[in-house]
Length: 242
Ligand code: 13P
Image (cartoon, rainbow, N blue to C red; front, side, top):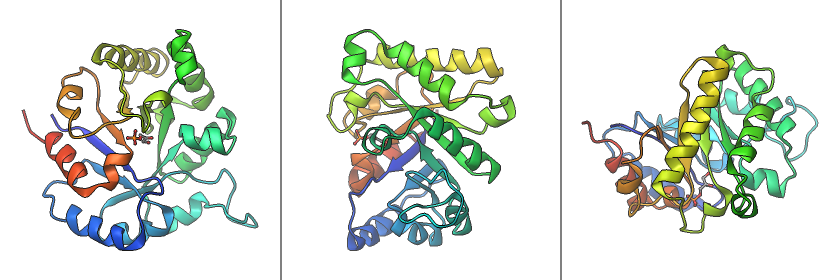
C-alpha cells in the first residue's frame, strides 16, 4: 500500500515557515508518491529541492496582459509538473465555471502538465441526496470532449465541500461508494481505471481508517499538509509496503 499524497498548502504558510517545512520534509526517505502545491510564490523553493511541485490553480488564459494571473506557460517554465483545477474554493470565491475548468484541463494537457481535478458536493446537495448527480455533472463538464488518452493523464480528487476544513468526514462506506461511482464512470466512458483521491479533513488520526477503504488511490490534504509533523505522520502511514 503506497498512497499518492497531494498536499494543498492553500495560503497557510509564511516565508520562514516554508523554510522549516522544507527542512522537515527533506528528512523523509521516500517522497516518490508525495506532491506539493505550495502558494505560487514559494513553488521554486520546493522545485529547487526536487519535490514534485504543482500549483493550486492556473489561469485559463495564455501568458500576456493579465494582471494577477499565473499562466500555464509560467508554471511550466519554473518546473512545475501539475496543477489542481476546479477546487471548490476557486469555484465558489472566484466564480470559476465547469467550462473554465475544462479549458484549464485541456491547456494543462497540451503543455504536458498533470491536471488534478476536484469534484464534490455541498452540504445542501448531500442533504438532498444529490451527491452522485453533482459529481456526475462535474465529471461530464470538466472532461467534456476529452479523449481516453487525455483522461488517463488526469488525477481526480473527490472532495465533499462540507468536509473541507471542518473535521467532519463521510463514512468509509460513503467514500467507497462515491469513489467506485467515479471509477465506473471513467471505466465505462474511457476504458481505463483512473487515479482517484479522497480529500476533506484528512489528518493523522483518521488516516488509518481511511486507508482501509477499497479503491482510494490517495489523498488531497489541506490543513494537515502545512503542519510538518502531521504531514510526515500521514506520509509514513501511507508508505508502508504490504
Ligand atoms: P482540509 O484537509 O483542510 O480539509 O482541506 C482539503 C482540501 O481542500 C484540499 O484541497
